[in-house]
Length: 408
Image (cartoon, rainbow, N blue to C red; front, top):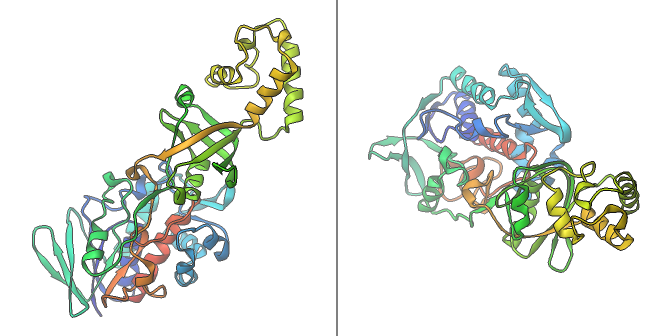
């Protein structure tokens, strides 16, 4: 059997290495960090949403970045296979809202440990603190790799699984893209995806740290056309907004370059405008002898009250029993449609995933092998594929990794 080199000990690289070794190859994994799965260990705030319990078509529909390219790999190693794989590796799993699958322990470290058990069981050799500088090819065929210290290693095939360019502190700094380009591949424009958004309005900063558990959001363009809507958790920050619904929304406005788009927040999605008005009237009756600024405690979080008062343009000291119907209805519309302008995303190194990467036109979808260099394979985020939140991106890593390891 062959001698296989894998560059990168993230989820895609470890699955690729384990599968290649399982098939009888001698496999060496080169990782520039001192341990495996550095980014994986902080995924999902340390909980690690490993996959999503949906069918393959639903999975593809949640992968806006070249999802159809993944049909072959997802049928070979589906989300169901991912679940079976981890359970067979001794990791109990649980399914939560939206089909999201997590380890029972809620610890991403346990996911990394399960992957390391797989590589260990199949006698993969992991070489840490070892940075690969380039892949070596002769006459359009892989012959090996060159390390940063100049050492050359011969291999029959090489799997590039170095990740994207988000979270560079974990080692995803784009070296794999440079190696791919040097070997003749096209790397499409690298953009941030699943990323917090920067808001123009200054009042957002006044609510820094405030989380909304049940907000309904809409994103529109400057003509008012709906681009995306969602319901769930979000948070205000010193620069704008973040949280699960915001991260998902960010992928839908990537093509707008995060400019000339607007965020609309419905603070009370369970109430229609009529019911919201009735609720306000009850509250105002209850606090009729108080000033407006002291009449919203039952309705809104403390951090939000001064902001809403300012935006409503109702004087804060105005007695509640003097607030007009028109003022009250203005307040209703504000609570049902708190609007602000998105002007940018945070820097790409804060993105959960990278959109863009090695062009899928130059990769065989059934094997993950390069169409340009024989014996060169790709797996994971280095490829120009990306998905929404919900376990879909890690599924891509596992599936493409398994396909590459199964094909070398």
